[in-house]
Image 1 (cartoon, rainbow, N blue to C red):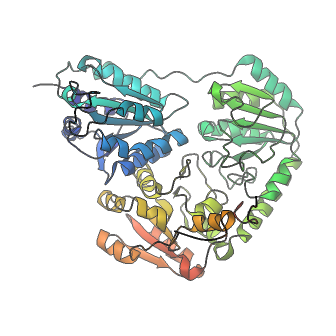
Image 2: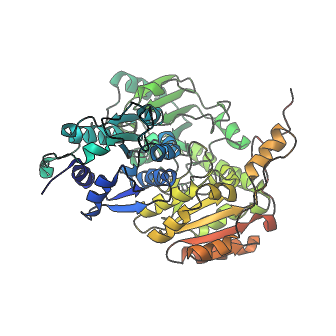
Image 3: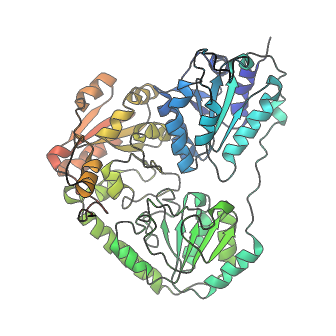
Length: 546
């Protein structure tokens, strides 16, 4: 019986721990997916578009902490996956994108064979952490190993691999899988001199804060030790839940953007330790928020040093190892600072909620009806950009997924990927009607997979965020109204329960019913009936002039 590169790909994935893959079958990946189908070792999720499949693999990787895998065809299929790869790059998600390629005798010759796109490797290289092309069947195991290792090595990210169709059918020896494993590099210890300097800086700090980002997701226990020593905490929007946000010692995603109270509180702090975060402009009002000084930055990536905010000290090293080393060397602080932080958190949260108009109660109500282990997935809809990113408590480091790159449309496929990676936990994906339209066909993927997912569509019949940006930037509104389907009729067509909320008092009971319903559920929040959502900072200010 012959054994081909396609067979090798199908056996490589479970050998490195992959149990679920996403994508679309096509002429240039049939040998690989045929081999996958014959082994029954990997669940294959049939997306309706490559963009959706790539987003699903991204969210699956974020929730599980393992390798997400997406298969596409070459050319247009690979290009359709680009938005998902861009988002995975923003989020630092370990995604392996396996795409076909035209036969080796045609590659890079612009001969017009089906799906042949000259420059495909360059396109994928521009949006991936790395892009590989298989050039001979004999190197298949080595290149697959290099690609998966690159995706999983910090700083993690998406990696693309092209496998030409003729090589997929080429015979190769079967590897000894019992002797195979990925040789991932060990966690990087903190640089000793920089660590010693950080300890010296923090020894006398009485009001120190941690800022925890995506790179600190594996450092929750170490961060908790520093909180027990008297530190306070805040997170980036991609680092939420590293410390459970019902802990009064963390501000969670209420990191100062849009909260004058938090910005004022920072002025009374005497140190900030930034761990595994870019301090992105999107979250710091384009780097205008003043952060506590001295600022110490910890990151495994040397290129993070000074990338956004200047720092007093940079420590290169693994987040968990470095924070544990700090906790080993530091003494407890007085409890007064954390008491002030807890009081500030309550005031700032209430003040922020008070600015949400008719939606003031939504964050607390939703958190109250959500199971504690539920997954919180969002699109870039106005409800997320205002309260979803900031004041709905996230309780686990891998419990929250959102478009870090601020794209509209990933919410539904991100929700599907999260739900399928959640081990039976319920997920809720909050999307706007505009974002829902971008990947609406993936609703049928959710139904076919019976994903444990609530799709909550915040329906204001248009681009609500854009309306407020237009008010702020142009003083008039244009191209913002959307005509969409009747969502309850769409739910019937797709074959899943549909529920509609048209009044604030119905929000909690309806969501409780949705969480109690097995499988996917579509919930429409009729914002036209409830009322327009107020703009959020900075679009709630006077229109700029000049």
